[in-house]
Length: 404
Image 1: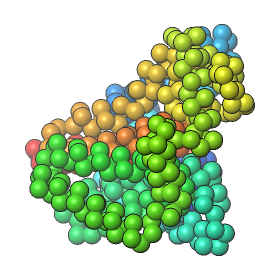
Image 2: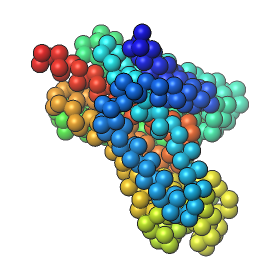
Image 3: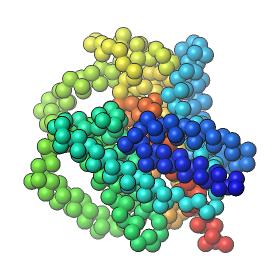
Image 4: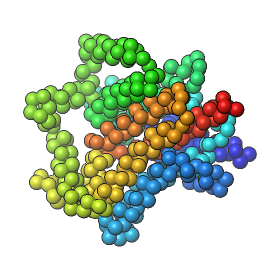
């Protein structure tokens, strides 16, 4: 009964974040956090083994570093309030431990849940655009940028379904990133649009490096993408808001060296202020309550009140200094290190393709908008770690079966 309860809890958490996050993020956040809280009750049995895993101890170490930086940087224990922004990260530990059971396979569950939810998200925003003519779809669900971030991450997470060896229908999960890309394009969000290209490029590069695909297949894939791009141009894809805004930025860069829109101007001021704030307190930063104010006071053109600096590196550097940046690197590296510790083989290589694309996408999207500290997107980071941990356990069990 204990085992079934543990695995049911992890399955419930996956349903919350994968099936619900792209279409009902608030409910997904609450249910995922509840799952994590309940999961702490199971740690007596399996906590010792789980905490030794990189996907667990690295995020927890990052939280510890952030706590130290925030207390010293703000000069008060009040700085610990900043840890609330990272609450979903705490759920990784108990949920990985609860799901690390023989017989629990997350491949199909993750694939089905992710595919269905991003398909639903794409349909919802398509209807929104058709009915309202908006260029920033997704507002019926969340902030368009955060909506696009979550849809893209869940869309690529759904590709976990392709890791089922010999599964007859496993390639159907490749549709998930397609649906996610539709949602991103209709949202008009430039960061996620760039992330789509980066994630596909990273996935293809890692597949080539690990010899999952041959150079001939890689060249064929590039040619296919180019052909699809040409066909899309003739079909008018460039008129979609996301593509249109990225093309406008590219045109500005070629013309004057940088994008010229007002939104980019404000973000550049935030980045400048974040860098100057970092230089004023390079080791521990200014804490979670003051770093935006400090950054705003140091720029030539103040950007006014804001909850963050629209950039993960800037936020971590200004709020936590070098300690904060170390925590940021630990967060990003955790899923990759979890995969690297697996036995060499095709399964590890396949999982590395998926995880490297997800981490690259999270990083790229975090360059132009905060990811860590935004509840629904931070929950998606926790889901990436959870799914990575569950799939890594499956690889280990499969390897032990073959060896045995």
